[in-house]
Image (cartoon, rainbow, N blue to C red; front, side, top):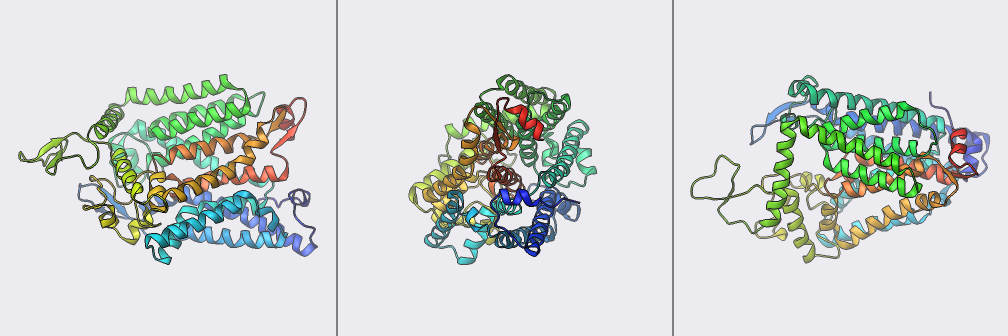
Length: 508
């Protein structure tokens, strides 16, 4: 059972004096919040797999088998978010900690919400659609506020992270198994769509290799942050890091690999050292990624296809193709059609998106109306909106549910004001952590390094994925940020001392 937070820690965090009754209520509310947060972190790791296990296979127009699963797992997840939101507000009220939630970052998220509403109103989004879109954009922040409200003990946090870490390790082992055993290993787990199995990209119990890549890379940044906060590192931490690196290479998630490298650089810059360890970590990750390419013809062919597609998209941009164009890799091109090379759809989407943004630069086209899951559920033919051009937004045969770039989606829906407001919020979330750990001569809690690295990772990955609003990544990111804020507000994120890191080791 998770231990309740000691009274001394709560008072150190700024909680007003309480009677015995309110003190007990506060402790129990904190315990319930930590339990619910742990359940949420575990639930999002199993949600899509559970849906597939309960799904009915259907065939799409390309002949791929897809899973049509029940919606109740999503309802459970949304219910957890609502519970966390309500109980967080009650916990803050009981503790009389409203002043703790008037920081610049807290004001910034309110401003961001107002900008979302304005973008929706000026773009013609119904009130209900504005609410749904705002929920998907910002539900991850509920996790951030729930951790701050819970103000948990270190023991509680350690137990939650241990359970989540075991699940991450399980996914890593499955990913390694999948890349060694091939498509049969995917089918044995109940997966129906073999798209990723055919090109030897592992995704374990998650539904996409990039989702698994994000999870593994964030965990590896946490391990490296822990090692960077120690003068002596037990070999088992490097062993765990190597195992996760092998699993990351099995996903061939290039965005996760690049984000990890950037995150390590952030830690070394803030740490003002550990460059040798950082270089070793990067070499291990890149080495296994290269090794995976070397032994897997499918991975090499896929990478070559994507790189060629990027070059082709810059050479023949979106809208420049002939009216009778047909991609040369298709088998249904008639002799009367002009064949063109296959192009990277992310580049084509970005080219169209920039053109659209220039026509409505301030507040965009309205939240919930372009290239995201809310737009798709509101109108499966969202891309045919005449505001996006005579032929609508050209999908080029790709997934009509999203545009594979969070920043593009945000920019087109909310314009420059929305994108700047979002970036300002992220900056204000991480700025106090960076300021706290920047000074020399301080012993820094691992979350002091992990949070800035995770933020850099999130910003970069969002360029190539809808990660900041998907079901999985926000819960992970805002757990890291929330716990960093807990230690910062409690005054234990950093401590002074002549030997710095060694004193952190003694406290732990």
